[in-house]
Length: 258
Image 1 (cartoon, rainbow, N blue to C red):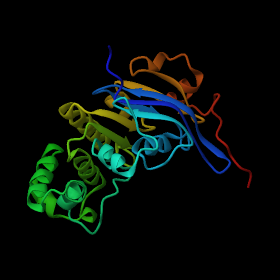
Image 2 (cartoon, rainbow, N blue to C red; image 1 turned 120 degrees about the vertical axis):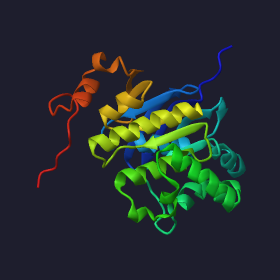
Image 3 (tube, one colour; image 1 turned 120 degrees about the horizontal axis):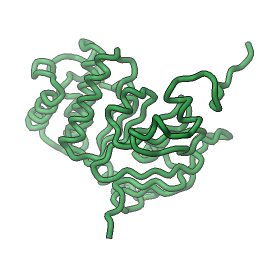
């Protein structure tokens, strides 16, 4: 009997007032598989990720982790479930009041009760894994470049060696060379951990680099999914317009008159 997907999302729906954001999302992520979800701004990518993390309660549907339903679980079960996850937030979301190593170790200390000395050792190891020296650990996030901040955020995401990592726009705001360095680090960290990964992006260079499989959201639904090698010949006009960045096509940008 085949093992269940690491993550299985079925019929996921979410509205905010009259606005329907997710309209029946179906998505599987296999064991040690890296899935990239693409789509335009406001298409529901981040809302889907927050539902998987349990940060947003969906209106309907199912989210199973390792075959177990997660929607509606008790607080204690949710806390145990969250130990499986690592997260790289859009914009890095580092704490300005903490030095770098404390940022990386935050979840270890606060979420897992690891002592500060041991947590610092782990944090410095993870900083090393993303190419940052121990001296960086004593700096404030404000003293770092955007690319270095993203590396610190990646070190924090992998600090507890999670089974699942979610990357929300991992290369947004970075120049192409720095973005490619981050892409390489994402691939390395996911492979070294053997983790399952969901990455949310509109950067097709990043998607091609880090994905085993790509899925596209449009108007709250997955309209196409396949291997990264198949996307350039998907035959889907919405996918084709998006990946080539064309203004003309079935995807229309809503523009209000002044």
